[in-house]
Image 1 (spheres, protein in one colour):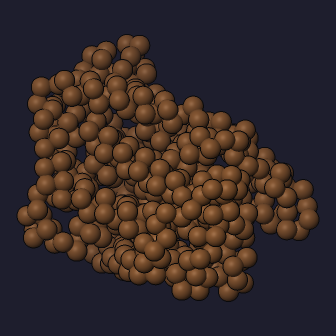
Image 2 (cartoon, rainbow, N blue to C red; image 1 turned 90 degrees about the horizontal axis):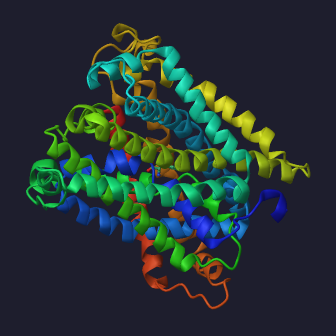
Image 3 (cartoon, rainbow, N blue to C red; image 1 turned 30 degrees about the horizontal axis):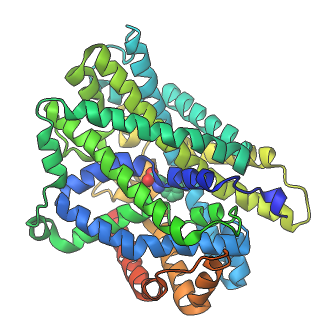
Amino acid sequence: MENKRGQWGSSFGFLMAAVGSAVGLGNIWGFPYKMGANGGGAFLLIYLILVVVVGFATMLGELALGRKYGRGAVGTYAAIGKKWTWVGYMGVASGFFILAFYSVLGGMVLRYMVGFIAEMFGMTGFGGLGSGEFFGGFTTNAGSMLIYYAIFMVLNIIIVSGGIEGGIEKFSKIAMPALAAILVVIIVYVAVQPGAGAGYAFMFVPKFEAFATNGFFNILRTAAGQMFFSLSLGMGCMITYGSYLGKEQNLDTNMVIIPVADTCIAIMAGMAVMPACAAFGMDYGRGPGLLFVTLHEVFSTGMGGFIGSLMGFLFYFLVLIAAVTSSISLLEVCTAYLIDKKIEKGEEPDRKKLTLIIASIIFVVGIPVALDGLGAGRAGGAALDIPATFLGITENIPMAVDCWLDLYDCLAEGIMMPLGALMMSILIGWVLGTKVIKDEVEETAGVKLTMYKFMEICFKFIVPVIMAIVLISQIMDFFG
Ligand code: PHE
């Protein structure tokens, strides 16, 4: 059974794959602007505390459960007890819906990368348009959106078809060090631009007055939501990756290395993005428009010339790597479910075929995300209306239905993921008992769970409370 499912070839390979899953659009896109807009250094402080009191334990819980039961999300929860299987299904469903919109975004990143390559060679990569105009035209162009979305999905299929060691691990081992190297190049280049300083100040200077203006609770829930999405927790991704770990792998250190590496990359991403915006006079408080509109302008008009195109290419290449190493982990959660089912039935799992089937279904489900102009709808020139229109809602449109992307995000990140993490911590803390986790960690010769007492408090009290806060506030955000 072990061989049919596959296994990581090395500890380094596993770490690159797991850090690759964690480091994604969330780090490069979400973290810098959320940090800047929510108190800078004050936000960072809360974020770091949350990584320690929620991130470490949840990461450990998922990896340990996965390795213990040797199955994906559904198989693991089913093995704990039939009545918990639904938690595993929520994980697979989360992976399914996140991958659908994540791949549309990944395709867009690919388009921007291609545009900057063309500009490097003196061609017009963006139709000679300004960043805002290009963005509007591209996102409402059904053909382009679908083609880049399809290419991105095919990339995922190729990698995941290759298996754990021969596909995911092999790709991540090259891609993640490349990502880190490119990030350093951009950080250094940006640091020497005049005016960059204001960007660091925006990010790092603690603005404790934000606790009063934004509200402490708001900052806490923003940080907590960002943290668990960024660590790929709550949907069985780390359970699935953990299920391919051998008993010789040290969970006691891995549960710290992955969150620390993810946080470092998020901070580094901010040190590339925010000062770049500051140096070229772009508005970095613009939120979600940051990744496409603002940064496109930074590279094409701000930096300009060949160096601008080169930096633009490097930057979107980096984002593409981050997106692919995350999306393959989402696809793997779904593929692993099908593989486990085959094995359970005593059949030979055909990974290539199963990957192709599930990815094709996800692709179809994601098509509306690529067609509604990211919320522009038919009124804005897109091919498809937003979900609210189908529901007949025309005023006070809740975020959950203001575009197809937000609808899928709401189902996954808004409801199923925090509920999944909440259920897991309750299961470990109150039903199974934390000793199960400790025993699994200590299966490795010579390894002791160093923070056992602390972990117990996290599983029993801190993680459930924080996850309940995230769940409630996400629902408020999406439906408020
Ligand atoms: N952690 C990824 C990011 O920050 C997203 C992700 C979530 C990936 C859940 C896998 C599972 O973009």
